[in-house]
Length: 354
Image 1 (cartoon, rainbow, N blue to C red):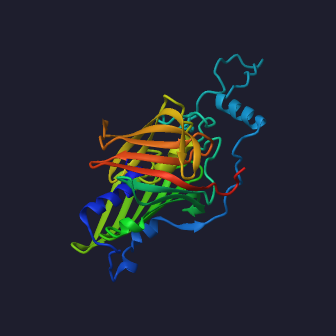
Image 2 (image 1 turned 90 degrees about the vertical axis):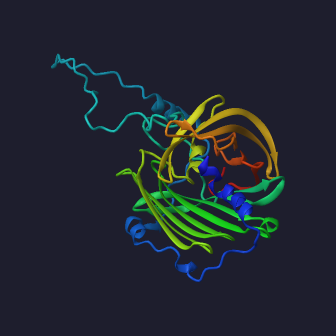
Image 3 (image 1 turned 45 degrees about the horizontal axis):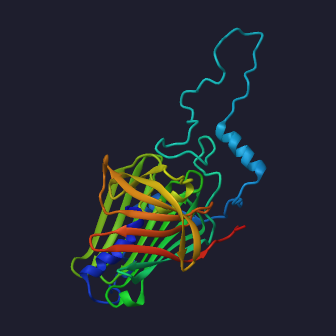
């Protein structure tokens, strides 16, 4: 599952090819990323957050949500002047769909065609910190954070941050300080942009991604520096499917679903010139004890389907909290040598917590 493991597995792969400590030095590091193409397509600025959303709807709100989801039609009014049998509710050509799109995604917990969940799991300044271990030794800390809202090309957007840093022990062999900022539209929960910042012993890298959902185009620009190859540039453009997530927004996006036991959930992901599908099946509910406390959790088996075939990259399981917030509590991934475990050690709920 690339969206979860791309940063974390990079840490382990780096350890296998380097035995030096400290970060790579490069005189042009400050100017490593300059892209007029990206800057012409994207404008990002701070914005005021939308009105607070209740964690648990009142009984009256639940009743309204259910009625909206069922969409009970009003009884037709018969006209005495007309004998026409044509329905005034006939679909209009070009009208927006009445069902939530895309069809591969589950619609429970959403009203009609809306892509916003009835209960928003995200809170500004929410912070979840994991300890990442490899062969029972702490390799580093993985952080998921919800930062203040931004405006991307005039659209209010979530600002999600994923950060990975090596522990003091592992930094003696290979140092990692990686960050990804992902901006996701507040209304339809599709990603606009991600900004990738990689600072490691073996490489310096800056990447920018922009998804043009109106024209279904993805662009990716990257500058990379290594001692062996020097400064390299990469540009990619490809067509994406409607409502696709990027490689880093998916770990946040999966939190909007209900995750009922025995049920499979899917959504589209576009990454590295590929259009793939994430599939996750909720296996069971269980209590898990962590350094951050004991949680009621849902265990999910994650898979990725690419071009109709299952990508066999080792088993991956994810545990999320069995509540309205769906925090990422634990990740287990089998890799070529051993297993990687990332588990929560600290949690800060963020604003509007009740």
